[in-house]
Image 1 (cartoon, rainbow, N blue to C red):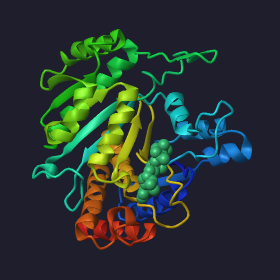
Image 2 (cartoon, rainbow, N blue to C red):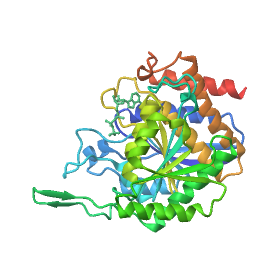
Image 3 (cartoon, helix red, strand yellow):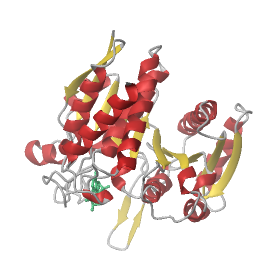
Image 4 (cartoon, rainbow, N blue to C red):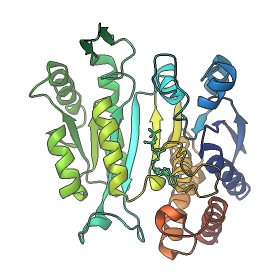
Length: 365
Ligand code: ATP
């Protein structure tokens, strides 16, 4: 029996409400396996922690997270808790920087039973992954933000060869895995604005250089403005998209919009040594404390975690359980019996998580 250590950040707002049933669900799933177990360690961080203790991401929490095999993180941030410069308290971004999590993985897929805003017979074919560079670009800590009196403000976009090469290799390997499992056609599209910004022309140049090492994968390039249009007009045509941090930030919300609800959009931030799995949505202060939060994005992020752990482990059950958990969420969507209000249902958070567990068990038996 192999035990994986999982760091857990409960977060703020609806964060703890969706994390608790997800951890409970994972515990019950592990009990069905003779091959692996998960050991959870809860770590403090978040906007609430900043308000109460003056620090959003305690160094001790980072140190403890570093010793774990994977990190589960719920949403963080509260609208009324700000740093002295007025910016929002978002420790998850600090964690990305601290742990060098350069690849933000944002899957966009439509499962049977999912009610989506796009009306086309082909919506059920939507299944692509947006890979968002996550530690530099327009968010780079080394890129100076400058305020010149009250007349001008500047930001700097930073693209480095080192991070870009790792990012593109990650995207190409992801496309290879998706091709092998029949989920993708084996194509990576570099999304940039290489026609205007030299930094992004450099980004595209490195993309083309790295592509030469992956002859089995098709490549494409696209400008980000066109991509926003195509993601609405023909999202079923894409496989893996790779892009700069800020563009990825915006396009991943568009991706969540395509899926019909933020409550269904999972994500992962992956580096060479660590990985964080968290829902795409924020802390939803408008529904916090009411039991209305949809836990599916958190559960799907946990499924991604199992599949990621499987990549460096001989335990095949990790991959099987990850896939089965994803399909169990789909079963609950199709059944339409236990859905939260964002999906038109009346179920509470725990009832949805219980329904996913029941669907998981049904699939295993
Ligand atoms: P952030 O800037 O941190 O991403 P935000 O304010 O842009 O946060 P969210 O907190 O994600 O966005 O909330 C946007 C809307 O989506 C809100 O109306 C919220 O209630 C809803 N929402 C977000 N997550 C969920 C969820 N898990 N279940 C149900 N509704 C959700």
